[in-house]
Length: 523
Image (cartoon, rainbow, N blue to C red; front, side):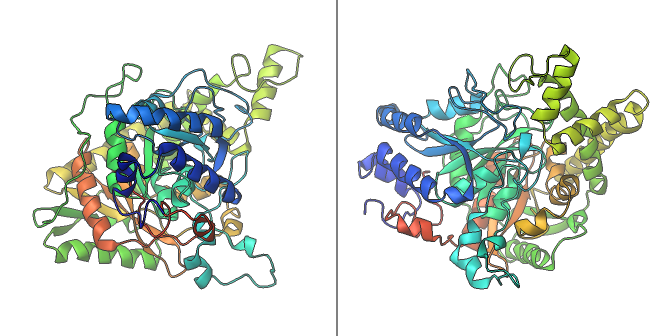
Protein backbone atom coordinates (compact mmCIF):
# COMPACT_ATOMS: atom_id res chain seq x y z
CA UNK A 1 0.00 0.00 0.00
CA UNK A 2 1.99 2.87 -1.35
CA UNK A 3 -0.01 5.90 -0.30
CA UNK A 4 -1.28 5.18 3.16
CA UNK A 5 -4.06 7.33 4.68
CA UNK A 6 -3.87 9.91 1.87
CA UNK A 7 -3.18 12.87 4.09
CA UNK A 8 -2.74 16.30 2.58
CA UNK A 9 0.28 16.47 0.27
CA UNK A 10 0.53 12.66 0.34
CA UNK A 11 0.10 12.27 -3.40
CA UNK A 12 2.70 14.87 -4.31
CA UNK A 13 5.11 13.42 -1.77
CA UNK A 14 4.54 9.89 -3.05
CA UNK A 15 5.20 10.99 -6.63
CA UNK A 16 8.28 12.92 -5.62
CA UNK A 17 9.69 10.05 -3.60
CA UNK A 18 8.92 7.50 -6.30
CA UNK A 19 6.50 5.45 -4.19
CA UNK A 20 4.04 5.71 -7.04
CA UNK A 21 4.47 6.74 -10.66
CA UNK A 22 2.16 8.94 -12.74
CA UNK A 23 1.36 5.88 -14.86
CA UNK A 24 0.28 3.86 -11.81
CA UNK A 25 -1.81 6.77 -10.57
CA UNK A 26 -3.44 7.12 -13.99
CA UNK A 27 -4.17 3.39 -14.20
CA UNK A 28 -5.88 3.46 -10.81
CA UNK A 29 -8.09 6.36 -11.87
CA UNK A 30 -8.98 4.66 -15.17
CA UNK A 31 -9.92 1.47 -13.33
CA UNK A 32 -12.16 3.41 -10.98
CA UNK A 33 -13.80 5.22 -13.91
CA UNK A 34 -14.77 1.81 -15.31
CA UNK A 35 -16.17 0.54 -12.02
CA UNK A 36 -18.24 3.72 -11.52
CA UNK A 37 -19.46 3.93 -15.11
CA UNK A 38 -23.05 3.82 -13.83
CA UNK A 39 -22.59 7.41 -12.60
CA UNK A 40 -22.35 8.55 -16.24
CA UNK A 41 -19.85 11.21 -15.19
CA UNK A 42 -17.73 10.94 -18.34
CA UNK A 43 -18.70 11.35 -21.98
CA UNK A 44 -15.26 10.46 -23.33
CA UNK A 45 -12.47 8.58 -21.54
CA UNK A 46 -9.15 9.20 -23.30
CA UNK A 47 -7.38 6.13 -21.94
CA UNK A 48 -4.56 5.85 -24.47
CA UNK A 49 -3.87 9.58 -24.46
CA UNK A 50 -3.91 9.72 -20.66
CA UNK A 51 -1.45 6.85 -20.27
CA UNK A 52 0.87 8.46 -22.80
CA UNK A 53 0.70 11.79 -20.95
CA UNK A 54 1.36 10.01 -17.65
CA UNK A 55 4.50 8.49 -19.09
CA UNK A 56 5.65 11.88 -20.37
CA UNK A 57 4.91 13.45 -16.97
CA UNK A 58 7.71 11.49 -15.40
CA UNK A 59 10.11 13.60 -17.44
CA UNK A 60 8.17 16.84 -16.93
CA UNK A 61 8.45 16.60 -13.16
CA UNK A 62 12.17 17.11 -13.42
CA UNK A 63 11.42 20.58 -14.80
CA UNK A 64 9.28 21.58 -11.79
CA UNK A 65 5.77 21.22 -13.20
CA UNK A 66 2.94 22.33 -10.87
CA UNK A 67 0.49 19.46 -11.30
CA UNK A 68 2.95 16.85 -12.48
CA UNK A 69 1.35 13.46 -12.98
CA UNK A 70 -2.01 14.49 -11.53
CA UNK A 71 -5.05 12.92 -13.28
CA UNK A 72 -7.56 15.64 -14.17
CA UNK A 73 -10.89 15.68 -16.02
CA UNK A 74 -12.36 18.49 -18.13
CA UNK A 75 -16.00 19.43 -18.73
CA UNK A 76 -16.96 18.58 -22.31
CA UNK A 77 -17.48 22.25 -23.09
CA UNK A 78 -13.77 22.96 -23.48
CA UNK A 79 -11.77 22.02 -26.53
CA UNK A 80 -9.05 19.40 -26.25
CA UNK A 81 -7.10 18.58 -29.40
CA UNK A 82 -7.82 15.13 -30.76
CA UNK A 83 -10.69 14.46 -28.32
CA UNK A 84 -14.40 14.91 -29.02
CA UNK A 85 -15.98 18.15 -27.80
CA UNK A 86 -19.74 17.57 -27.79
CA UNK A 87 -21.29 19.94 -25.23
CA UNK A 88 -23.58 16.92 -24.63
CA UNK A 89 -25.45 17.84 -27.81
CA UNK A 90 -26.31 16.17 -31.09
CA UNK A 91 -25.19 19.41 -32.71
CA UNK A 92 -21.53 18.67 -31.91
CA UNK A 93 -21.61 14.89 -31.65
CA UNK A 94 -18.43 13.63 -33.29
CA UNK A 95 -16.77 17.04 -33.47
CA UNK A 96 -13.03 16.87 -32.74
CA UNK A 97 -11.27 20.14 -32.05
CA UNK A 98 -7.94 20.86 -33.76
CA UNK A 99 -6.68 22.87 -30.78
CA UNK A 100 -6.62 22.95 -26.97
CA UNK A 101 -8.50 25.49 -24.91
CA UNK A 102 -5.99 27.73 -23.12
CA UNK A 103 -6.87 26.22 -19.73
CA UNK A 104 -6.40 22.69 -21.07
CA UNK A 105 -3.06 23.62 -22.62
CA UNK A 106 -1.88 25.20 -19.36
CA UNK A 107 -2.72 22.05 -17.40
CA UNK A 108 -0.84 19.90 -19.89
CA UNK A 109 2.10 22.31 -19.81
CA UNK A 110 2.22 21.88 -16.04
CA UNK A 111 2.33 18.10 -16.32
CA UNK A 112 -1.32 17.16 -15.73
CA UNK A 113 -2.79 13.97 -17.17
CA UNK A 114 -6.10 14.48 -19.01
CA UNK A 115 -8.32 11.47 -18.29
CA UNK A 116 -11.28 12.56 -20.40
CA UNK A 117 -14.27 14.85 -20.87
CA UNK A 118 -17.13 15.01 -18.37
CA UNK A 119 -20.90 15.08 -18.82
CA UNK A 120 -23.17 18.13 -18.55
CA UNK A 121 -26.51 19.63 -19.51
CA UNK A 122 -26.69 20.32 -23.25
CA UNK A 123 -24.53 23.38 -23.98
CA UNK A 124 -24.46 23.90 -20.18
CA UNK A 125 -28.09 25.06 -20.15
CA UNK A 126 -29.40 23.49 -16.98
CA UNK A 127 -28.90 23.05 -13.26
CA UNK A 128 -29.13 19.29 -12.84
CA UNK A 129 -26.85 17.69 -15.45
CA UNK A 130 -29.95 15.83 -16.60
CA UNK A 131 -30.64 17.37 -20.02
CA UNK A 132 -27.64 16.25 -22.07
CA UNK A 133 -27.93 13.88 -25.02
CA UNK A 134 -25.76 11.31 -23.21
CA UNK A 135 -28.16 10.99 -20.29
CA UNK A 136 -28.22 12.28 -16.70
CA UNK A 137 -25.29 12.20 -14.30
CA UNK A 138 -25.85 10.37 -11.03
CA UNK A 139 -24.63 11.82 -7.76
CA UNK A 140 -22.02 9.49 -6.18
CA UNK A 141 -23.56 10.19 -2.78
CA UNK A 142 -26.66 8.29 -3.96
CA UNK A 143 -24.57 5.14 -3.49
CA UNK A 144 -22.74 6.18 -0.34
CA UNK A 145 -23.06 4.40 2.97
CA UNK A 146 -24.14 7.69 4.56
CA UNK A 147 -27.11 8.15 2.21
CA UNK A 148 -28.17 4.51 2.14
CA UNK A 149 -28.36 4.41 5.93
CA UNK A 150 -30.74 7.37 6.04
CA UNK A 151 -32.77 7.12 2.83
CA UNK A 152 -36.20 5.51 2.85
CA UNK A 153 -37.04 3.40 -0.23
CA UNK A 154 -40.12 4.58 -2.10
CA UNK A 155 -43.34 2.73 -1.43
CA UNK A 156 -44.33 0.01 -3.90
CA UNK A 157 -40.89 0.16 -5.50
CA UNK A 158 -38.49 -2.72 -5.53
CA UNK A 159 -35.97 -0.74 -7.53
CA UNK A 160 -33.56 1.08 -5.22
CA UNK A 161 -32.13 2.74 -8.33
CA UNK A 162 -35.17 5.03 -8.38
CA UNK A 163 -33.84 6.69 -5.23
CA UNK A 164 -30.71 8.24 -6.75
CA UNK A 165 -30.22 12.00 -6.56
CA UNK A 166 -28.97 14.56 -9.06
CA UNK A 167 -25.52 16.14 -9.09
CA UNK A 168 -26.66 19.65 -9.83
CA UNK A 169 -25.36 21.39 -12.91
CA UNK A 170 -24.35 22.11 -15.36
CA UNK A 171 -20.87 20.85 -14.42
CA UNK A 172 -22.33 17.74 -12.79
CA UNK A 173 -20.00 15.32 -14.54
CA UNK A 174 -16.93 17.16 -13.26
CA UNK A 175 -18.33 17.31 -9.72
CA UNK A 176 -19.23 13.60 -9.77
CA UNK A 177 -15.79 12.70 -11.14
CA UNK A 178 -14.01 14.48 -8.28
CA UNK A 179 -16.48 13.25 -5.66
CA UNK A 180 -16.10 9.61 -6.74
CA UNK A 181 -12.27 9.79 -6.70
CA UNK A 182 -11.94 9.03 -10.43
CA UNK A 183 -9.77 12.15 -10.78
CA UNK A 184 -8.00 14.52 -8.43
CA UNK A 185 -9.43 17.72 -9.91
CA UNK A 186 -11.70 18.76 -12.74
CA UNK A 187 -12.50 21.84 -14.76
CA UNK A 188 -16.07 23.01 -15.13
CA UNK A 189 -17.58 26.29 -16.24
CA UNK A 190 -19.60 28.81 -14.28
CA UNK A 191 -22.10 31.19 -15.87
CA UNK A 192 -24.72 31.40 -13.14
CA UNK A 193 -23.50 28.84 -10.62
CA UNK A 194 -22.68 25.84 -12.81
CA UNK A 195 -19.55 24.98 -10.83
CA UNK A 196 -20.67 25.90 -7.31
CA UNK A 197 -24.11 24.27 -7.52
CA UNK A 198 -22.90 20.73 -8.35
CA UNK A 199 -19.95 21.17 -5.99
CA UNK A 200 -22.42 21.76 -3.16
CA UNK A 201 -24.53 18.73 -4.09
CA UNK A 202 -21.52 16.44 -4.55
CA UNK A 203 -19.55 17.50 -1.48
CA UNK A 204 -16.53 19.06 -3.21
CA UNK A 205 -14.91 22.47 -3.46
CA UNK A 206 -16.13 24.56 -6.40
CA UNK A 207 -14.34 27.80 -7.29
CA UNK A 208 -15.64 30.48 -9.65
CA UNK A 209 -12.73 32.90 -10.22
CA UNK A 210 -13.09 36.61 -10.91
CA UNK A 211 -14.22 37.30 -14.46
CA UNK A 212 -11.08 37.98 -16.48
CA UNK A 213 -8.64 36.08 -14.27
CA UNK A 214 -8.67 32.89 -16.38
CA UNK A 215 -8.83 32.67 -20.16
CA UNK A 216 -12.07 31.63 -21.85
CA UNK A 217 -10.34 30.83 -25.14
CA UNK A 218 -11.52 27.39 -26.26
CA UNK A 219 -14.51 27.38 -23.91
CA UNK A 220 -17.66 26.93 -26.02
CA UNK A 221 -19.49 30.14 -25.05
CA UNK A 222 -22.86 30.34 -23.35
CA UNK A 223 -22.90 33.92 -22.03
CA UNK A 224 -19.67 35.70 -22.95
CA UNK A 225 -20.07 38.43 -20.35
CA UNK A 226 -20.46 35.95 -17.47
CA UNK A 227 -18.76 32.67 -18.47
CA UNK A 228 -15.67 31.69 -16.49
CA UNK A 229 -13.83 28.35 -16.26
CA UNK A 230 -14.59 26.70 -12.92
CA UNK A 231 -12.34 24.59 -10.70
CA UNK A 232 -13.53 21.52 -8.77
CA UNK A 233 -11.30 19.81 -6.21
CA UNK A 234 -11.52 17.92 -2.92
CA UNK A 235 -9.90 20.67 -0.86
CA UNK A 236 -9.32 24.41 -1.01
CA UNK A 237 -5.53 24.07 -1.23
CA UNK A 238 -5.88 22.09 -4.45
CA UNK A 239 -8.19 24.74 -5.92
CA UNK A 240 -5.51 27.33 -5.17
CA UNK A 241 -2.83 25.25 -6.91
CA UNK A 242 -4.98 24.84 -10.01
CA UNK A 243 -5.85 28.53 -10.04
CA UNK A 244 -2.17 29.38 -9.84
CA UNK A 245 -1.43 27.22 -12.85
CA UNK A 246 -4.31 28.62 -14.94
CA UNK A 247 -4.33 32.36 -14.33
CA UNK A 248 -2.42 34.57 -16.69
CA UNK A 249 -3.18 37.11 -19.37
CA UNK A 250 -4.06 35.40 -22.64
CA UNK A 251 -3.76 37.40 -25.88
CA UNK A 252 -6.45 35.10 -27.30
CA UNK A 253 -8.95 36.40 -24.72
CA UNK A 254 -9.00 40.18 -24.50
CA UNK A 255 -10.94 40.12 -21.22
CA UNK A 256 -8.07 38.53 -19.28
CA UNK A 257 -5.78 40.66 -17.14
CA UNK A 258 -2.40 40.38 -15.49
CA UNK A 259 -2.71 39.42 -11.83
CA UNK A 260 -0.29 38.81 -8.99
CA UNK A 261 -1.91 35.64 -7.59
CA UNK A 262 1.18 33.54 -6.91
CA UNK A 263 1.51 29.82 -7.47
CA UNK A 264 2.11 29.24 -3.78
CA UNK A 265 0.37 27.16 -1.16
CA UNK A 266 -2.19 29.10 0.85
CA UNK A 267 -1.17 30.28 4.32
CA UNK A 268 -2.76 28.67 7.36
CA UNK A 269 -5.01 31.35 8.81
CA UNK A 270 -5.05 31.12 12.61
CA UNK A 271 -6.54 34.47 13.57
CA UNK A 272 -9.83 35.64 12.04
CA UNK A 273 -10.38 38.47 14.52
CA UNK A 274 -9.50 41.10 11.92
CA UNK A 275 -12.02 39.76 9.41
CA UNK A 276 -15.43 41.24 8.73
CA UNK A 277 -17.92 38.66 7.44
CA UNK A 278 -21.06 39.96 5.76
CA UNK A 279 -24.39 38.12 5.89
CA UNK A 280 -26.63 39.43 3.05
CA UNK A 281 -30.22 39.54 4.29
CA UNK A 282 -31.58 39.17 0.75
CA UNK A 283 -30.14 35.64 0.58
CA UNK A 284 -32.92 34.48 2.90
CA UNK A 285 -34.54 33.45 -0.35
CA UNK A 286 -37.96 31.86 -0.85
CA UNK A 287 -37.57 28.09 -0.73
CA UNK A 288 -34.47 28.11 1.47
CA UNK A 289 -34.74 24.98 3.60
CA UNK A 290 -34.76 25.32 7.38
CA UNK A 291 -31.84 22.89 7.48
CA UNK A 292 -29.60 25.08 5.33
CA UNK A 293 -30.76 28.22 7.14
CA UNK A 294 -29.67 26.66 10.44
CA UNK A 295 -26.33 25.61 8.94
CA UNK A 296 -25.77 29.14 7.59
CA UNK A 297 -26.47 30.59 11.04
CA UNK A 298 -24.16 28.07 12.67
CA UNK A 299 -21.36 29.01 10.26
CA UNK A 300 -21.80 32.70 11.10
CA UNK A 301 -21.56 31.81 14.80
CA UNK A 302 -18.38 29.86 14.07
CA UNK A 303 -16.72 33.01 12.73
CA UNK A 304 -18.19 35.17 15.49
CA UNK A 305 -16.97 32.85 18.24
CA UNK A 306 -13.50 32.84 16.67
CA UNK A 307 -13.34 36.62 16.98
CA UNK A 308 -14.44 37.76 13.52
CA UNK A 309 -16.87 40.62 13.09
CA UNK A 310 -20.10 39.26 11.61
CA UNK A 311 -22.51 41.87 10.27
CA UNK A 312 -25.79 41.79 8.38
CA UNK A 313 -25.54 43.62 5.06
CA UNK A 314 -27.97 44.51 2.31
CA UNK A 315 -27.73 43.91 -1.43
CA UNK A 316 -31.04 45.60 -2.30
CA UNK A 317 -31.15 44.75 -6.01
CA UNK A 318 -30.52 41.03 -5.50
CA UNK A 319 -34.25 40.14 -5.75
CA UNK A 320 -34.21 41.39 -9.37
CA UNK A 321 -31.03 39.55 -10.25
CA UNK A 322 -32.46 36.21 -11.39
CA UNK A 323 -34.94 37.91 -13.76
CA UNK A 324 -32.24 40.11 -15.29
CA UNK A 325 -29.94 37.11 -15.52
CA UNK A 326 -32.58 35.25 -17.55
CA UNK A 327 -32.95 38.15 -20.01
CA UNK A 328 -29.21 38.67 -20.48
CA UNK A 329 -28.41 34.96 -20.54
CA UNK A 330 -30.95 34.08 -23.23
CA UNK A 331 -30.05 37.13 -25.32
CA UNK A 332 -26.39 36.10 -25.44
CA UNK A 333 -27.36 32.46 -25.99
CA UNK A 334 -29.38 33.46 -29.05
CA UNK A 335 -26.34 35.23 -30.44
CA UNK A 336 -23.84 32.50 -29.59
CA UNK A 337 -25.95 29.63 -30.90
CA UNK A 338 -26.27 31.31 -34.31
CA UNK A 339 -22.85 29.91 -35.26
CA UNK A 340 -24.20 26.35 -35.25
CA UNK A 341 -25.72 26.31 -38.73
CA UNK A 342 -24.45 23.09 -40.31
CA UNK A 343 -22.21 24.96 -42.73
CA UNK A 344 -18.80 24.95 -41.04
CA UNK A 345 -18.72 22.27 -38.34
CA UNK A 346 -20.93 20.03 -36.29
CA UNK A 347 -24.17 18.37 -37.33
CA UNK A 348 -25.60 18.99 -40.81
CA UNK A 349 -29.08 17.87 -41.82
CA UNK A 350 -29.52 15.73 -44.94
CA UNK A 351 -32.26 18.10 -46.14
CA UNK A 352 -31.30 19.38 -49.60
CA UNK A 353 -34.29 21.56 -50.54
CA UNK A 354 -32.43 24.82 -49.94
CA UNK A 355 -29.75 26.36 -47.76
CA UNK A 356 -32.44 27.88 -45.55
CA UNK A 357 -34.29 24.58 -45.06
CA UNK A 358 -31.00 22.78 -44.35
CA UNK A 359 -30.11 25.44 -41.81
CA UNK A 360 -33.49 25.19 -40.07
CA UNK A 361 -33.50 21.37 -40.09
CA UNK A 362 -29.95 21.25 -38.74
CA UNK A 363 -30.86 23.36 -35.74
CA UNK A 364 -34.12 21.49 -35.18
CA UNK A 365 -32.29 18.14 -35.18
CA UNK A 366 -29.17 19.33 -33.38
CA UNK A 367 -30.59 21.26 -30.42
CA UNK A 368 -32.88 19.94 -27.70
CA UNK A 369 -36.02 21.73 -26.54
CA UNK A 370 -34.18 23.57 -23.78
CA UNK A 371 -31.63 25.13 -26.12
CA UNK A 372 -34.26 26.01 -28.73
CA UNK A 373 -36.42 27.57 -26.02
CA UNK A 374 -33.62 29.80 -24.79
CA UNK A 375 -32.79 30.87 -28.33
CA UNK A 376 -36.43 31.86 -28.88
CA UNK A 377 -36.54 33.79 -25.59
CA UNK A 378 -33.29 35.58 -26.37
CA UNK A 379 -34.41 36.59 -29.83
CA UNK A 380 -37.65 37.93 -28.36
CA UNK A 381 -35.74 40.16 -25.92
CA UNK A 382 -33.54 41.40 -28.78
CA UNK A 383 -36.42 42.38 -31.07
CA UNK A 384 -36.35 46.06 -31.97
CA UNK A 385 -39.56 46.78 -30.07
CA UNK A 386 -38.31 44.90 -26.97
CA UNK A 387 -34.62 45.78 -26.90
CA UNK A 388 -34.88 48.89 -24.69
CA UNK A 389 -37.68 47.49 -22.56
CA UNK A 390 -35.93 44.23 -21.65
CA UNK A 391 -32.28 43.93 -22.70
CA UNK A 392 -31.12 47.49 -21.98
CA UNK A 393 -33.10 47.66 -18.75
CA UNK A 394 -31.58 44.35 -17.60
CA UNK A 395 -28.09 45.72 -18.30
CA UNK A 396 -28.84 48.78 -16.18
CA UNK A 397 -30.09 46.65 -13.29
CA UNK A 398 -27.00 44.46 -13.65
CA UNK A 399 -24.89 47.56 -13.00
CA UNK A 400 -26.94 48.31 -9.88
CA UNK A 401 -26.42 44.74 -8.67
CA UNK A 402 -22.65 45.06 -9.15
CA UNK A 403 -22.67 48.43 -7.37
CA UNK A 404 -24.43 46.88 -4.37
CA UNK A 405 -21.49 44.53 -3.90
CA UNK A 406 -18.99 47.39 -4.32
CA UNK A 407 -20.75 49.42 -1.60
CA UNK A 408 -20.77 46.49 0.83
CA UNK A 409 -17.08 45.76 0.33
CA UNK A 410 -16.21 49.46 0.62
CA UNK A 411 -18.04 49.54 3.95
CA UNK A 412 -15.33 47.30 5.39
CA UNK A 413 -16.73 43.83 4.75
CA UNK A 414 -14.05 41.38 3.61
CA UNK A 415 -16.05 38.30 2.64
CA UNK A 416 -19.74 37.50 2.16
CA UNK A 417 -21.11 34.23 3.57
CA UNK A 418 -24.24 32.76 1.96
CA UNK A 419 -25.86 29.41 1.20
CA UNK A 420 -24.91 27.87 -2.15
CA UNK A 421 -28.17 26.02 -2.78
CA UNK A 422 -31.69 26.13 -1.38
CA UNK A 423 -31.58 22.50 -0.25
CA UNK A 424 -29.64 19.28 -0.61
CA UNK A 425 -29.80 17.33 -3.89
CA UNK A 426 -33.23 16.34 -5.16
CA UNK A 427 -34.09 12.79 -6.24
CA UNK A 428 -33.97 12.55 -10.04
CA UNK A 429 -37.60 11.44 -10.29
CA UNK A 430 -38.71 14.59 -8.45
CA UNK A 431 -36.30 16.94 -10.22
CA UNK A 432 -37.57 16.15 -13.71
CA UNK A 433 -41.18 16.95 -12.77
CA UNK A 434 -40.47 20.65 -13.32
CA UNK A 435 -39.36 22.26 -16.57
CA UNK A 436 -35.75 23.34 -17.12
CA UNK A 437 -36.46 27.07 -16.91
CA UNK A 438 -38.24 26.77 -13.55
CA UNK A 439 -35.54 24.52 -12.11
CA UNK A 440 -32.72 26.80 -13.27
CA UNK A 441 -34.40 29.89 -11.80
CA UNK A 442 -34.68 28.11 -8.45
CA UNK A 443 -31.21 26.59 -8.43
CA UNK A 444 -29.32 29.68 -9.65
CA UNK A 445 -30.98 32.13 -7.29
CA UNK A 446 -28.13 32.13 -4.74
CA UNK A 447 -25.22 31.93 -7.16
CA UNK A 448 -25.86 33.96 -10.33
CA UNK A 449 -25.47 37.39 -8.70
CA UNK A 450 -21.72 36.75 -8.34
CA UNK A 451 -21.58 36.17 -12.11
CA UNK A 452 -23.59 39.31 -12.80
CA UNK A 453 -21.03 41.26 -10.75
CA UNK A 454 -18.00 39.30 -11.99
CA UNK A 455 -16.90 38.42 -8.43
CA UNK A 456 -14.97 35.38 -7.20
CA UNK A 457 -17.00 32.86 -5.21
CA UNK A 458 -16.38 29.41 -3.79
CA UNK A 459 -18.49 26.56 -2.45
CA UNK A 460 -17.06 24.80 0.59
CA UNK A 461 -18.64 21.45 1.57
CA UNK A 462 -19.90 21.97 5.09
CA UNK A 463 -22.02 19.12 6.47
CA UNK A 464 -24.35 16.26 5.64
CA UNK A 465 -28.08 16.85 5.64
CA UNK A 466 -30.56 14.75 7.57
CA UNK A 467 -30.78 12.57 4.44
CA UNK A 468 -27.02 11.97 4.46
CA UNK A 469 -26.34 14.24 1.48
CA UNK A 470 -23.77 17.06 1.17
CA UNK A 471 -24.63 20.68 1.87
CA UNK A 472 -22.25 23.53 1.09
CA UNK A 473 -21.93 27.20 1.90
CA UNK A 474 -20.71 29.95 -0.42
CA UNK A 475 -18.08 32.61 0.18
CA UNK A 476 -18.02 35.65 -2.13
CA UNK A 477 -14.95 37.89 -2.27
CA UNK A 478 -13.78 41.15 -3.77
CA UNK A 479 -12.71 41.24 -7.41
CA UNK A 480 -9.27 39.71 -7.94
CA UNK A 481 -8.88 39.00 -4.22
CA UNK A 482 -8.78 35.23 -4.66
CA UNK A 483 -5.99 34.82 -2.14
CA UNK A 484 -8.07 36.28 0.69
CA UNK A 485 -11.16 34.37 -0.42
CA UNK A 486 -9.33 31.05 -0.58
CA UNK A 487 -7.50 31.63 2.71
CA UNK A 488 -10.77 32.24 4.55
CA UNK A 489 -12.39 29.26 2.81
CA UNK A 490 -9.45 27.08 3.87
CA UNK A 491 -9.87 28.17 7.50
CA UNK A 492 -13.56 27.35 7.38
CA UNK A 493 -12.88 24.00 5.69
CA UNK A 494 -10.56 23.05 8.53
CA UNK A 495 -13.16 23.97 11.17
CA UNK A 496 -16.06 22.00 9.69
CA UNK A 497 -14.14 18.80 8.80
CA UNK A 498 -16.53 17.60 6.10
CA UNK A 499 -16.76 13.77 6.12
CA UNK A 500 -15.36 11.46 3.46
CA UNK A 501 -17.80 9.80 1.09
CA UNK A 502 -17.96 6.05 1.71
CA UNK A 503 -18.35 4.30 -1.63
CA UNK A 504 -18.22 0.53 -1.99
CA UNK A 505 -16.74 0.86 -5.49
CA UNK A 506 -13.80 2.80 -4.07
CA UNK A 507 -13.17 0.32 -1.29
CA UNK A 508 -13.09 -2.55 -3.75
CA UNK A 509 -10.11 -0.93 -5.42
CA UNK A 510 -7.41 -1.84 -2.94
CA UNK A 511 -6.05 1.65 -3.37
CA UNK A 512 -5.02 3.82 -0.48
CA UNK A 513 -4.89 6.86 -2.78
CA UNK A 514 -8.66 6.96 -2.60
CA UNK A 515 -9.39 5.47 0.82
CA UNK A 516 -9.87 7.13 4.18
CA UNK A 517 -8.96 10.57 2.98
CA UNK A 518 -10.60 13.93 3.11
CA UNK A 519 -9.13 15.30 -0.06
CA UNK A 520 -6.52 13.08 -1.67
CA UNK A 521 -4.74 16.37 -2.07
CA UNK A 522 -1.97 16.88 -4.57
CA UNK A 523 -1.03 20.31 -3.22
